[in-house]
Length: 263
View (tube, helix red, strand yellow):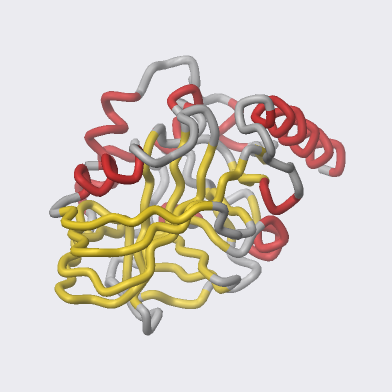
């Protein structure tokens, strides 16, 4: 385990150094590393067993998104507090001994602010943010605080073995709609070259200001808001050491399936 952790941090350091060449003036520190558990393609193929504790995950970040053992809900980490939005729509505090099969976290510190307005849907918001990002070849953590005219989210109930593919699991998702809701968008933007590892483009979750509800964002509307952007040129990954991950075929191109799941 110690050897694997060292290897993951070495990989992160090398990617950080490579990203510095694309972002002159940037400085890589531990706070600039996006730490990820497993891969999105493994999750898509039903590798749902939690392999990394939240006690350990919290040592890598105070901000991020993910899911839980058996795919039991959507994870939102904000200001150091971790929440589990279950299929009943309620956000529960996460216990340290709980585990995750897939998560992405960092220590959030904004490097850039982007003003957005009159974004009537997810696509329009994405376009406005993308126009202002400094590079398409690095990772970003994104935070939006405010009151939103409309937010549509989902969560998925815990799955039973033998686990289905993620596309089949989401057919039983619970969908929630919020109007004039105050809260925070928590998310990650990943570059195209990370496909198979993470979700290329935007992957956003939401939690209400009272920390009682939220989920994976399917759509939203913003009249006016400021997007805080944390440039994270470092990337580190913890892969499972046992279980289904060792036998799953990760050589396939699952991007078309992923797009259907995300939408």
